[in-house]
Length: 271
Image (cartoon, rainbow, N blue to C red; front, side, top):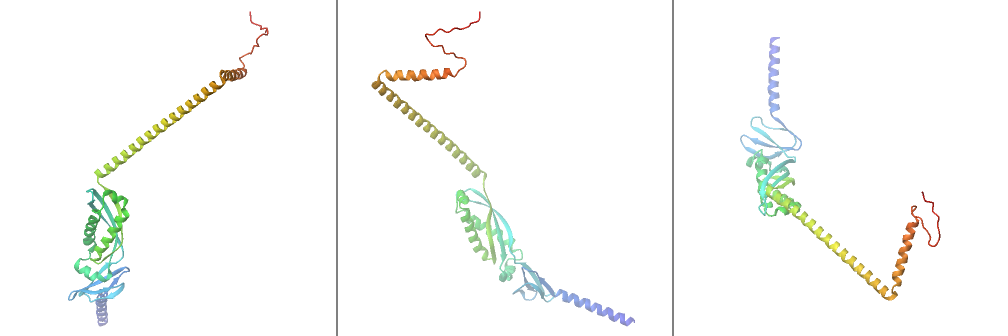
């Protein structure tokens, strides 16, 4: 009976050791990842291992897993424009490594390739592109600036085995001096617009006064011509028209009594 338990114990120990060896010889590569094998005797292997479960030689080979999915990164940069204005720019990059170049990336740069490469090349490209434009052009031609940054940065990143799926300018501001100058310019433009409006209004009032004076002068000439032709008849006609209008207005008033001339009218006055 003792021998049986001893045999079972030895078998269990052998199975445990065998299971540990098998488990250490297996590794998984998740979806969207790739693996590079480092061999203690032969160094980094050229083959890139895809997704799934794979075997390796325990204690001799070691898998280095890389994420090959697109990842975002924001890179802030302070640089100068063509007209020597300070510009604060933040660039958002979606990047991923070229799967076939992972062995070279691991040997020449390391696992933290994004920390070592992206900030430096982004700063270099942004400084070079922004220096071609004035501060005003960076605002009015932002799409052109973004396209040139994207083209130059993609070309620069490809030398390190990186693919940039998207490059966009997410933040663009200027120094305090430039901002104050822009505000002063806007205020000056508003004051100039207000002054032009005042001048135009005064000119219109002047034209209206001239037209009114010309109308009065023309009316006076017409009246003078009429008097010259009709004599005092026109004056008498205007007097009759005025008297008729006055009589009409008085007839509508309750407090006015009309007394015809040449007739006796008896009024009962209080004693």
